[in-house]
Each structure stands twice: as C-alpha cells, then as structure tokens.
Amino acid sequence: MSKPFVMLVDDEAEFIDTTTKRLEKRDLKVLTAYSGKDALEKVSSNRNLEVMILDVKMPGMDGLEVLQEMKKKYPLIEVIMLTGHATIESAIEGMKAGAFDYLMKPCEMDQLVEKVQEAADKKRSQDEKIEKARMEKVMASRGLS
Ligand SMILES: [Mg+2]
Image (cartoon, rainbow, N blue to C red; front, side, top):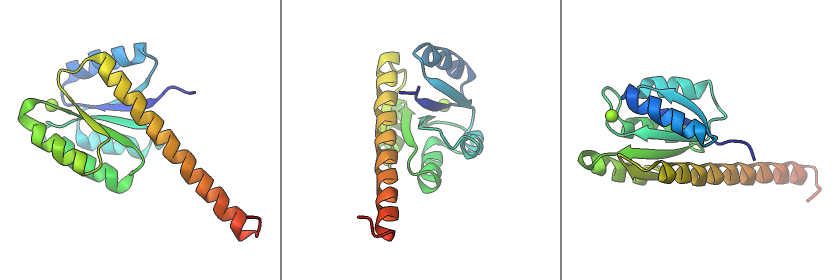
C-alpha cells in the first residue's frame, strides 16, 4: 500500500515544521499550508490528496470555513480537525459538517498518525466502492450484468 498523502494546515509555522518532520519520519507524504486560502489552492492542484489535518483557529478563513468548502468541492478527502479547548465548539460543528474526526492540541504523534491512517483507509475504501459502482454501470449499459 502506498503512503497516505496528507496536507497539514496551520497558521503556526513552527508547529508545521516539527509536525511535518515527525509525520515524514512515520512514512507519510506531507504537503503544508499556512492558511485556509493557501490550503484550498493547493488542494486544487493535488487532487490525489487523501487526508487534511486542519487547525480550527486561524486568522482569515478559519478551520470550520475551510472544512465546509472542502466538503462542498472535495467530499471524498477526509478532514481531521485540530482544536484547542477554546474552539471545541467549532470542532463539534466540524463533525456535523462531515469532518472525519478531531483531536485536541497538543496531540500525541501516535494518535495523530493512527487517525490519519484510519482516515486514509476510509478514503481508499470509498474510492474502491465508487470505482466498483462505475464498473457495474458500464457493464449494465453493455448488457453484461
Ligand atoms: Mg492556529
């Protein structure tokens, strides 16, 4: 199985740097973005992205707004929200809006990697189901079902 492809979105450069290094060490392919706008632009040119790790509290577009945009445009990419105690309400809203899960900051690296893996597995299984349904549609249209 290929490495999960994740995007880490956070306004804190230091957090991005250390977390990216740790995730890469655990064999994940990591793309980074420092704002919601930056993240959405990068997703449009990286359509094979599987999981987004998204900070809730960011200046400009916050995590919840980014999530809503993601679910509208790229519903199959799984999103894990990172939240502090102050923004837990946004994480709950995020879950209702289709986030895969949320984690409290600071989060344990093991826990984050495990969540990313679960989210990537879900994405891959969804992709497989869609592919299978497409094949069945083709077969049916040719009278082969
Ligand atoms: Mg932040």
